[in-house]
Length: 507
Image (cartoon, rainbow, N blue to C red; front, side, top):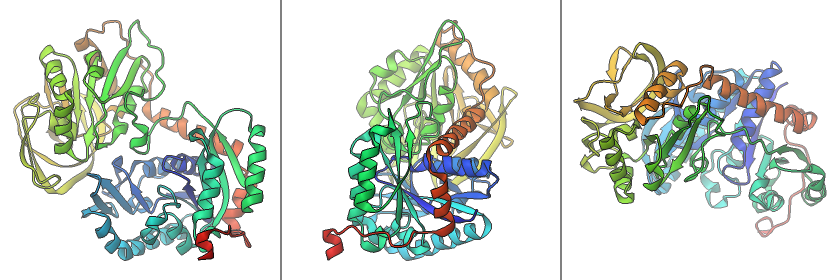
């Protein structure tokens, strides 16, 4: 098997990332040398790669599906939004500056060269490359600077599978309209459709799919059913809905639940850090955006942020800052990660991310942080209370003062802070270290007075993640027309696909 194709979506969160991960896992299980590729991602959920760079977390999961370590090759351009108008631009894993829409337009020629080179190298090395689009190709206002959708498909002559989420409603119109609004040259590359998250009897949908084929000349290659158990490694902020649960809480091992409120910051980054907690039986995690949601929680988590100073001000404006101070005074558990850790300190000096200069923190930890131009990017290993742990760091802030005891030892140095029942660290992914997580949860439960909560002894976050990838691969194998899919890989874009006549086509 040899070839490449692009999975595009009618909308953001239509299912592109999970479909690519499922296809990659399915192919890898069949012995195919396969790699993922997302030319450009916009996400604050990122990981550190073995080659010392930074990529979107979805591409790290897709690499895992392929049996590969994450690499900057799989996501050469990453945009990390720090506000509604500005994003940090990461190229081949390294932050190169902050851009707005106009700046990005000026970068497009250079970035196209980077993207083309990385994709060509992957296609030369692997049997199959499964590319993922970004947002929707129907965003024709952005077509001139498009690197990840039809711009990539046309440059590399890729067949495109268009996926739509039927759970949102109107999926047939989304699929038809996406094709119809494209330029004729782009339309020629749309080679088939996939419907995602279908519930019920697929035969009820069949007449609509048949009519869609009549109208567009393109087949539907699969209807993937809704799978309630798919939740880990959410791609972006669309997966962190206010007050929504994280994962599918399982009944407790003991007599009591442990409840967790994860603060849903406006510019939250690496929101997936709390998913390890949600893997535990008897741990119920919910996103919180206002103080009342913190009141009954046994643990409050303040996650990372791409706009630390701005999100700190949001904590004050919403009253969550006061609720956190009250919790700390009462000895109720709080955990801060990266930007959340910095907010819990006494002082942040930021002339890099926000330009705000010296800003007062919440004062729950004796900690002072100063931002530097260069970003810390590293995978880390160490221990806490003698228990092995690992994670990764992505931050501009450097600790210049720590008056509280260090919590961890990482890469041979002290890391993090602990004061009573308040913990903080720069380490993302820390709670995926199973033994460490179990030990710490016992401490949290004791501090919260949950004597009836019992930590399970057999939960492996890594195994949960692999099980989800296998479930995705099973869905692809069972519900995608693999014969047609393989022909697209082998033969490329089908000849003589009809053009839908629209006003843009007439023009």
